[in-house]
Every structure is written in C-alpha cells, then in structure tokens.
Image (cartoon, rainbow, N blue to C red; front, side, top):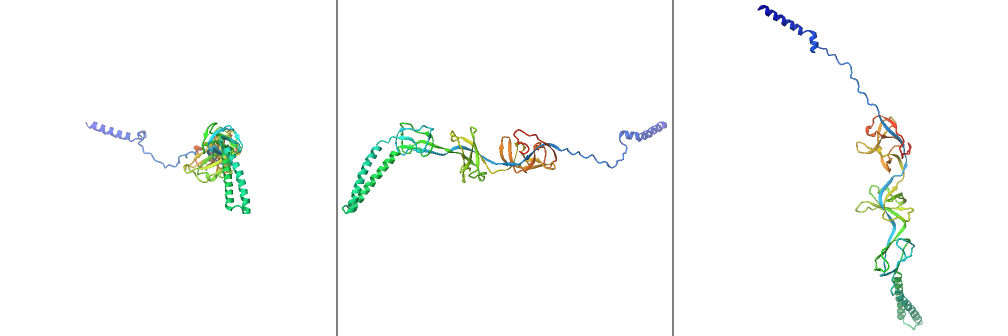
Length: 370
C-alpha cells in the first residue's frame, strides 16, 4: 500500500517538472516574452503621383459680345387705306402685290353726279364774280350800299367753298398711294360697294425693313441706337443691320423692351411677320474661344473652368460666356494667356499638382492662339 502512494507522489512530481519545462511553454505560447520598445517607424504612405490632364494653351483675342433675342420681320411703314367717300368700285388699276409709286391710283369709285355738280358750281361762280365786281364798282362811286357790296362778296365766297368741297369729294373717289411701296393686299374687288371708313387696301413700304424684338430687363442697359447686329430668318438667311430704336419703357405684361433692327439692304421678297433671331453686337472685349466641355462648377456653384498655373497646380477661374458658336464658346474674364484643362478637369481639385499633356488641335479650333 505504502509503495503505491510513493509511486503516485513520484509520478506527480515528474509530471509537474515536465509541464514546467521550456519546450512545452514554447509549444503552447505560454512562455514569458520580453516586449521590446517599438524603435522602427512604420513605412510612410506613398504620395500619389501627379494626375495627367490634357491642357490647351489659349491666347485672348478681341470678340464682340452678342445679345440675342427673338423677333419678327416687320415693314417700317404699313398703312391701311380707307375709303373717304361711299361708292361702288369701278376700277382696280393696280394688281395685288405690285409695286406702286407715290400718287399712283390704286382704286377708283363711281363719281356719280359729282362732275355735273362741279360744272354747275363753276358756272354759278362766274356769275357771282360778275355780280360782286359790279357791286364793288357801284359802291366805290356811292351808288351802291355797303351792305349790298358785302352781300355780293359773301355769295361769291359761298359758291367758291361749295365748289372746292365738290372737287375734293370727286378727288376722294380716287384712292392713291400715299408713298412708294407694295400693294400688299386689296380687300375689295370690282363692283363692290364701299362705305366711308371701310378698309380697302394695305400698302407696305419695303425699304427700310425692320426686325422687331423684345429685350429683357437684364440687358436693356447695354443696348443703344446705332449698334450693329444681324437677324437670322427662319428660312436660313442672315441679314445685317443697325439698331434704330430702343424703348426706354417696358411693356406692362411682359416687362420687356421693344427694339428695332433696321435692315441695311433688305431683299425685295422679304416677307413680314417671319420669325427671326436678332443678335446685337456690343463693343469688343478680350475673349478665349474654347470647347463648351471645359466649363465646370465650383463648390459655391460659380461657373468657370480649371487651368494649370506656372507651378503645374490646378486653379479655378470664373468666366462669363460672351458668344456661342456651335460647340465652341467665347469666354471673358480670363488672363490674356492661359493653359485650360480640357480633359480630366472633373478628377482634380483646387491646388492639386498635375502633369499637363498638350491637347491636339480640334476641328473648328484656330490653334493655340485661338
């Protein structure tokens, strides 16, 4: 019995010695390890290489800003001719659409008995003239009272007035062109009866011709009489002209101002009320001609572009659009010479260093100086 106890104690002691041995501690990871202070710094993060962007060098050139508004063609003068006497149309000597000189008869009305009344009054006038002359001579000699002389003169003047009125009425049966122009529309035909004041014809003066537009409040202060401009018609034609009128009072409903572009050399077939695009040219300013795709917005919402400075860092510059030509823009507010980022501007930020790569010339570009 005692030998069994001694054997158990010896086995326990051997097991304790074996568990405390170094190899097992290392095997189980329980061995004490000395922690050395961290004397080696972690490797620094690698700096991102400069981002490659495509740039275009641009030099400012004078460019005339344009104010563009919609408009319609309109003759400088268009008159509705109205009948001044009543009567039946007996002749239409001018065809509709024909050109007429000032004073040309356009429409003839039936004079009825007016010529006969004029002949009667002419004979009566001759009689009254003889009567007044006799009364005047007798009055000068004292054989005629002054009242009779005055009465003879009044009767003479009365006949003269009636004769003048009848001659005017006869003249009004002939409607004449008040100015040289084109008979745009004849509203009556042979045999029609017209009343006093009825519209009978529309006469249009083809030269000068106008393109009339409505300018908004935001640009009216830049417009002045004499500025040159152009009008692009709906049929594709472009006409040159000058501003001859700029209103200084806005129309109540639209708050816009009427402007009139007088066409310098209008074609004979220019129609009225054709839609047109008016472009008024302002005094030139320095501008850069660049693709429309260079425009971006900064954090505050300003419109501008990104460019590369002398240290090859990205800078933002606000711009003002002066003119547009297809996919190209004329931009103002930039330095005289600038390297504009044309590709990659959306992937770089203000102040970031980049690697600029010169962009090839594009169709429609005028080269680096453009």
